[in-house]
Amino acid sequence: MMIIGPEAEEKLDWIALSDAIEAGHHMPRASIDDTFLYRGDDTLLSRAAWIDGLGQLVKTATIFPGNAELGKPVIHGGVCLFSDKDGTLEAIVDFHLLTKWKTAGDSLLAARKLARPDSRRILLVGAGNVAHSLRQAYAAAFPGAEFTIWNRSLAKAAAFAAKYPGMAVARDLEEAVAGADIIGSGTMTTKPILQGKWLKPGQHLDLIGAYRPDMREADTDCLRRSRVFVDSRATTIGHIGELKIPIEDGVFFESDVVAEFYDHDLFRRQSEAEITLCKNGGGAHLDLMVARYILDAVRGESAGARG
View 1 (cartoon, rainbow, N blue to C red):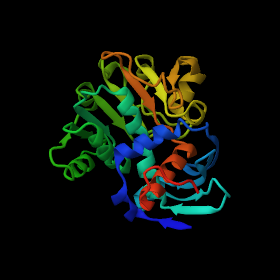
View 2 (cartoon, rainbow, N blue to C red):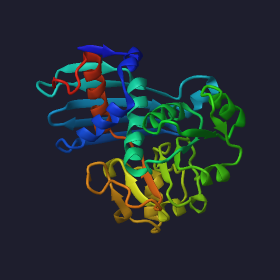
View 3 (cartoon, rainbow, N blue to C red):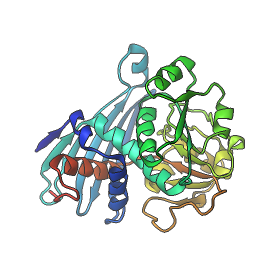
């Protein structure tokens, strides 16, 4: 059994990771199951996945938003990767390492398929940990892109931008959205902050932050004006407010979702002018694909011998 910590990051590559996620979706469809427990704003989330030929994984996260005011991390957790051959515990993977690369790698794969290849202006909405990983991931696929950061706290946005030479700080979100080719949003808001009337032809909107039934980053007009994709129907449509709320209100329909990652021939941009939107909902099957990629990279194996 191997314990994989943050030091493994030096062996990882964003493009190779997103390729591994795509390859994982050409394997037998994953069996997945999620459990959510709540106490006020606090969440205990456990996700499990089994992919024949890849193995099994269980990932548990605690999400305590109030920790931010105490100067503590909001999210903690643990990850166990099991052998496909005999079910033995093959690796314990650092939770934050896996979550970072899974979340941004998920969005990177969507952007590689849905954003215009000539995208050069990228807006990050929110200045938390997700934004840092998105900055790294997007830059790998869109070299030479100019990045802008917007955050409700201008001071936090400025502190974020200071870590990346040449990064601009946006004061007005509407203006920043209108000027972007790719918009990556990773906030903890429950009420939409992105409005569909701001969107322009040819843009790609990547929604990452919302993970609960009461959370939304984009309003219904964003959905109406876009061709809508998800990483996984099973972990988004009935679970995350981004889609769940407008569906329940009868102003958006499950059939309006064009494709998920398993729909290989459908998950793509059709024209230069269309607006594409992808909801990144995650899921233990994605954690499993990424954990396997990380273990393979640590072992120095490109494809990996399945445990």
